[in-house]
Length: 124
View 1 (cartoon, rainbow, N blue to C red):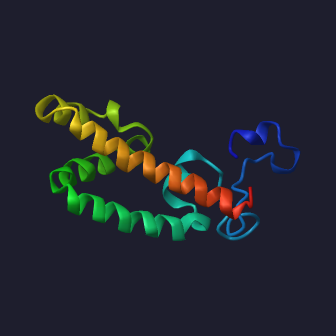
View 2: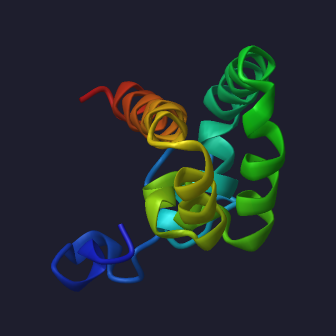
């Protein structure tokens, strides 16, 4: 919504339009960062995703340190495209392409599930 504020008459400030955010004390700009990390309307989905991520990392423990390191460096970049992050590039060069496949599985699932949760909330 932050970008759509330029052409949406009722939301010139680009505020998040989800119900727990719109015109409440929790209102915030509808940025990609907020969508991925902090939007209170998506908290239930993020809690489910956190559990799923823990399970995924439990099944692939050799990824734990890499994921943790990337989330500290830049969580938005990690979720959107971790393939450009230095730790990921180094890990792939050292251990092979399977690392990238698993990271894409984790990160694409995260983004897709958040998107679907948002669409469900908006009844789209």
